[in-house]
Length: 334
Image (tube, rainbow, N blue to C red; front, side, top):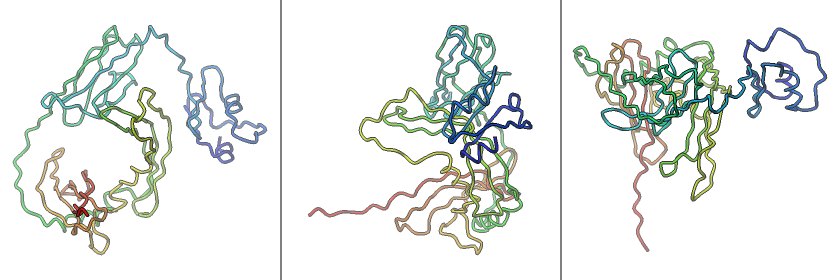
């Protein structure tokens, strides 16, 4: 596979249970990456080969269940108090490697074999109590209302801290808080485009992200698709046909600690002014809330938002941000 990957610019993903990577196969290579030739090389009873771009995926043959042996549960997950849809809720079957997540409208659809009838489906989401339902014997549509998870917080004495000192400490603590060696992450990627509350494009994938050392500040991340799918029931855009430049590469550029856009540079200089907005308790740890916005309203591309920083380690816990509003320009009619 190494030879095929280098010669034809292919990426292989395989199930270690069906591919013996220690074996050596000697064959005459074709002039190009012919799919029929690759299938003939790897496919056998119980093994199937599929393609996605330059990705070659080798795994156990799943076959097709008869339609009568498949049960489908569809529905919407909302907050019990607000009745607002909850996106990215984890939906699964307890004890089974089957699951999905809700979309931006809180909707989900999960297909499963008849053998799962009577088992429990689980719904989990950060900040909410887990919900459950028994899988029925017929296709069904449900609405799941998840209750807020409340925790009684200990008494906290809030003392003002200089926000500039805090963000400088975050910058100086990068080597202590973040890996000095590159490492591989597996992630779930979803990209959607909506028009008039309807999805016009949905793409999902399991991806691998190779993150370089945080000491190599100018090194870039590498993203590889393992397996993906594209929505087949989305509708076309009504007015304008256009293509958005997206994909997992662009969100990899949002690693704030690597890019450092919102933090002071090594000399302590920053294009942003910081405010101390209070504290929170997250998993029994004190967290500072630091607001930021640009020093000037020049109309240039800047951001505003809030960082949450763990008080003991000075590690960034989370960040919420958005583009600053464009300045209003009055135009006189002539």
